[in-house]
Image 1 (spheres, rainbow, N blue to C red):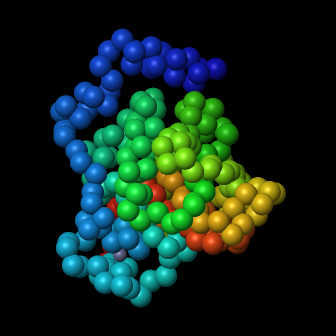
Image 2: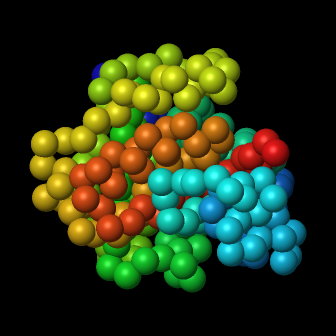
Amino acid sequence: MFAFLRRAVTALLDALLPSPITLALAETPWQPDTVHAYCPRCGSSAGFGAVKADGCSRCVGQRFPWARVTRLGAWEEPLQAFVGAMKYRQHWAWAPWFGTHLAEALRLDAPAAPVVVCVPMHWRRRLERGYNQADLMAEALAKTRQWPLAHPLKRARHDPKQMSLSRNQRLLHARGAFALRKNAARQIGGRHVILVDDVLTTGATLRQCARLLRRAGAASVHVAVVAAADRRK
Ligand SMILES: [Zn+2]
């Protein structure tokens, strides 16, 4: 109820005042990355010509459960501030805005006839926040490109906020944090899946979700995120 009220108040303020997005962009102009700015395997920033067929220097020799990563930018300012506002300051309007940008970014490298899936949020977190930003991004992305949405994944348990966890704790927590819905195979079997989330940091969450999608019969998984952190070498 409080989440609903907070969202209603934010929506009302947005209608009366210049949107937080307009204000933020006026202060810090920002452009999405081109596909040459990062490694399509691990999402790390990479200079022109630094990515070979088997990846960049940060991920060469490593295996990923996804075929490709599309990102809008590096996990640094101003995207950290924009994503923070989207997740923690009730500025949910960033989510469809990012979703539309992802739809544009995917014009260059999306698989044929994909289905769009978001990383699910536990209902308790959703109740607290009033929305799942990944869900809103996925909706806008799917609508812009007229691709179908599917919901084959669910949260198996309510986890502590990941930001308070170390890298190893995150990897451990992601295991078993998600599960497939009963009709997952019917929803995505044989289809190319675009998996949407806000940030790719350790990759623990997206790895776990991508593995489950492949287990349910997805032909391939293509990760689409607002921002990706550089992998440690
Ligand atoms: Zn790489």
